[in-house]
Length: 303
Image (tube, rainbow, N blue to C red; front, side):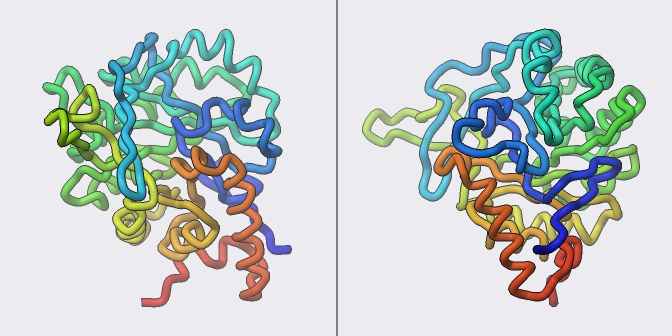
């Protein structure tokens, strides 16, 4: 059996398999199906400073080889997380990571500061695909200026491993990754969802209440794979790849493209045991090809 352990900054993981925020709840929901402690890292659902009700229904739509979602970061806020969720998950024997979201830099700073005090949360993932209400609703992550400002601000408030989740809805994602790195990110994860739309032809109306939503699933994999490859060549910090990973083969492809770890998202809705299958599949691949460590295949793509 190969050594599956990887490091993301100071974050030590038993294997490179992680779960994507918003697709795995708080981990507890999957405990009846798998031993969740076998997962390298569990990224819990998006957490904001204040309670958010999310968007009106309908806010999910199935698409060919994927799905659209416009849930709108529904959660009960970081103080509820600290008081009610954290006590339940803090002793799960894996890396429990919080995805932090906000609508203003001050929100990000305060939320990150609160989570920084939680001993059993070793890292946060910064969702910079959120609309900046002070800049007319443009997402923080679509300009290098926006990326730089929010990452620099959070870095000053958060002392543990800082992962920055990049938006694919940009002209040059490598520029965004470099901006995150230069302002203190320990790692970048990509891609977040692509902006998409679905229409009900019979009713002549959009299916989602918000008209557009975030697309994920198998259909986005080629785009995500390309962006991970580009970013891995552009930065020195570890890259975490996600977007359309449905099985172990997809995961290996992302690692060959330069990802040090991977996240599984939409596939969890189809098969709640997929994370364990992917971990086992990666190990089998390494054994068959004579690798001693999973780190040997990171960026090993021959071009």
